[in-house]
Image 1 (tube, one colour):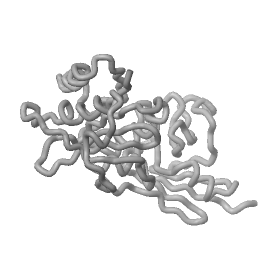
Image 2 (tube, one colour; image 1 turned 180 degrees about the vertical axis):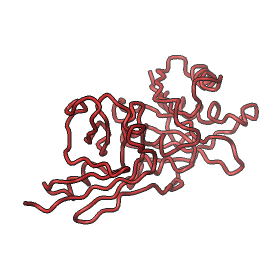
Image 3 (cartoon, one colour; image 1 turned 90 degrees about the horizontal axis):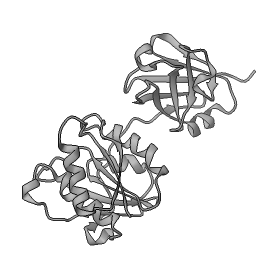
Length: 262
């Protein structure tokens, strides 16, 4: 029984999500459908890529991840299917594939050549993309539904700027708890830190100078920073909404300064 996950910006208010699921179940009645999220901000491929990257490693081999972000039909639209790290990804060629894999290379990637049903011209997600996802989830090969390609559309994202004494990063994601997640990875932090003390600086002249292991290591209402499940540096408030209380939002700058060893 195949597994198909769904990540979309369709929300829960309209009929679109139900239509998408109905289309999949009609083609593959025994499929296991898993919602990753339908609350991605409209057209936000960076937000979607972050959510998918932190979810897909938990799924079994050969899971198909259907990405319904910015899939509206255009004359030059391309839709891709990709094999990567033992799993499959299906979606529009709008840059999201390049964000998901970063500097890695996919095992296989094809431009989907399934004929568009004109009845669903304005909803290719429930037509071309679901047909591709169901084909793969049912054990079909990528080469049967597309033409091999080497590169997807590349999307430029903010990258940390660093030297031997500091890292300048940006807020890339704010989760539903209000935790502020940056683009500073644990590996980069450790590489530059080299065992030194640090000061994390951000908006309103706020600072943090200790890494926590857990959110409850500080008193309720106090701020902290830690490397959470995403392995990126987070700013949080124990039992509080850090983004609102600290005034930190998407794309804002944070700075980590490392002190000389005593």
